[in-house]
Length: 201
Image: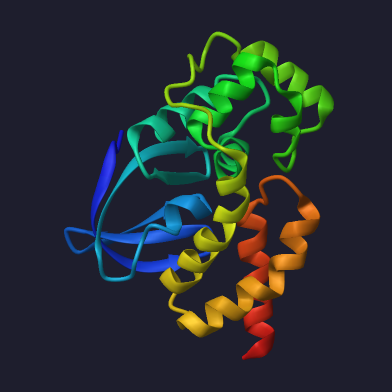
């Protein structure tokens, strides 16, 4: 198993990065939060999980070992594959997922695209004793709600857009984020922002 990749960031896309390791470019699937911390040409180290299928080998990358561990534990629940596990981590931090499971918070899980009420109930039952207790203190709601702007801006700049372009794209998707209420999904906002930028060019 490939436990991590380390090297300069060679390319960035909305859902993946290419890290140069020993002269080879390794494509790694990442959440928007992880991607927002990467910069083209800068050194990075990503914890990774290799998912082997009959027709593909896919490497998933994470900001730290804790995120990777939760990604792998989520897939022990029936019906949860790597894509859904990554979507859960795109919406919630590892601690937020632990807290949601520990407190039986259905609403937190249904905030993830692809998880309905019945699916959330099933996941809460299956994951109850697997994720462990939350490690950190509960995150304050206000910073989380406003933090999407910083995350989205950083992700766009990391993808090579100018600061002004990134600011305009963030402003363009602000109504969509506010309509979502609570903590907006940065992944969905990033896609919407990229569409507005493509139309502008």
